[in-house]
Image 1: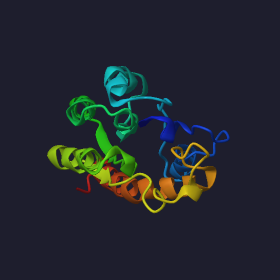
Image 2 (image 1 turned 90 degrees about the vertical axis):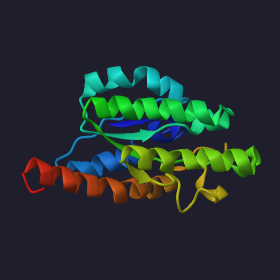
Image 3 (image 1 turned 135 degrees about the vertical axis):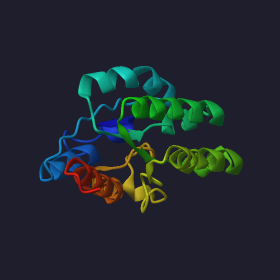
Length: 186
């Protein structure tokens, strides 16, 4: 299950053009099914309020957690972002759901200190909770204006394959290890 914001919900893109749709098609060849439980505008605090119900409704084995960007863009405190993401992670782990954390970065106009502290949230949480991490969801193009829609925030259709590949590089290792456990090949 992808649990994210507009970057995962496909904001401003044609239906089925977003990275989650691309990943869903790829996973069908792996005998895996993907649910997109992303909401444009979602924050980590909003996700914290709805994660329990999402887990009960969809019963995922893996959650790709892609939240925090909207909190950072709104200038939320680093501690509150970290606390909300950590609560989501802990809820998943209590429910025996593996988390793949998708890291995010902020534009430099938010100031060096804030952007660095924000960026550090993701590897810190991944290390503390033993999670797999996509260090930066928009890796390889996040600083290239031509890969974004007119708003400069949401990746364009031609950037979606890159996002999907950034996630797939990490997710495929998780799927292999889960299959090994399921088949007793630990």
